Image (cartoon, rainbow, N blue to C red; front, side):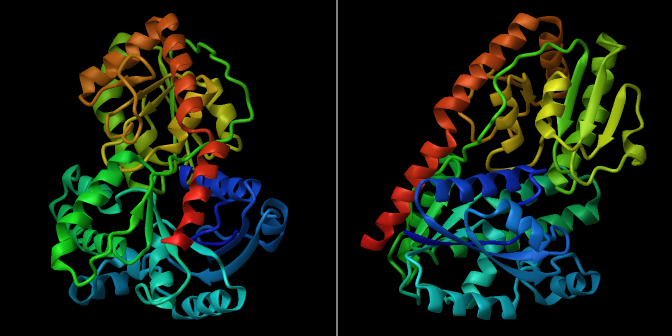
Length: 409
C-alpha cells in the first residue's frame, strides 16, 4: 500500500514522547510492508538538516516544508479579536497546502494519514472537506482541547486563566469539526474513541453530513532495545519530559511546591533528578534542596535506569505519556497522577502507583522507597502490561489493516 503520512514537525531527535511515537509508527509501517511517504513541516523549533533525514529516515520518502510556527505577539493579539484557534492558525500555510495537493495529484496515494491535530490545517487547505477521492484518516494523539481546559483550571493567574479558557473553547470547536472531515479516525486510547463517537452521534442529526467516520483505536507501541532490568536506587527519584510543554512544566512545579517538601520530611537525604528537552540548568525555580537539574540528557533510557522511581505529576493532559511506557518497559517503578496515567488500563499498586493529592503522592513514593520488593513487583507487572498492549509491530500491523480497508468503505 502506498501511504502518505502528513505531519507538523520532523520527529527527530527522539527527546520527547511525540517524536518517539511518530517515528516509531513511521518506521513500523514501513517494516510491515507499506510504501511510506512523509510530508511534514520543517519548523524552526524542530529544524532537521538534510543529513539527518538521510541518516534516520531511509525507510521512507520525506518531503519537507519550511515553517516558522512560533508564537507571534502581534498575530496572537489580533487573534483575540478576529481569530479562531490561534494554535491552529500557526500551522496554516498556503504554499505548503499547494505543495501537498501537487504531491497527492502526482503520486496517487492509496490512503492519507494525518498525524495529529496540528497537521490538519495544511491538509484541509489542500483538500477541502471530503472532496478528494483518496480516503483519509485522522490520527488523534489526544483530545487537544482537554489539555488546555485542564491547564486553565490549574492556573491561578486570572488573566492567563481567561486566555487559556478562550483558546480551549476555540480549539474544541475546531477539533470537533475536524472529526467529521475524515473518512476515518484513529484515536490512541479507548476513552478518546468513546468521547469522539459520542460527539459524532450527538451531532449527526443536526448535520447535513450523515456519515460517521470509521473509528479504530491504535495504541502506540514502543521499541525498547534494552532488556528489562529493575535496579533499586535508594532515595532517588526523577522526572523526564519536554519542559517546552506547559503541562509538564506545570506538573513539575506542582510536585516541587506541594509534594517534595512532604517527602523531605520523611527522607531528608532524598534526591530528585530532573531532565528534559528545553530544561534550563539555570532556571531558579528548580534551585531547591535535593533537586538536581540535569537539563537535556543525551540518552533518556540510560537516565531513567540510573535514577530510581519515575514520577509523572501531570495535572493537565490527554492521550498517553510515551515516556511512562518507556519507563514501564525498562523496569522503572512509576508514581503518577490519574491524569498522567490516562489511557492506560492499569491499577494502583499493581503496574504502578496512582495518587492525586500531595500527601497521597508523597506516601506512594515513600512506599516504593522503603519497600524494594513492592517496587520490583510493580515494575515487573508494568513490563508485562506493555508487552501485552503496546507491541509496536503488532499494533502497527493492525493499523495498516484498518487503513487498507478504507478503500472499500
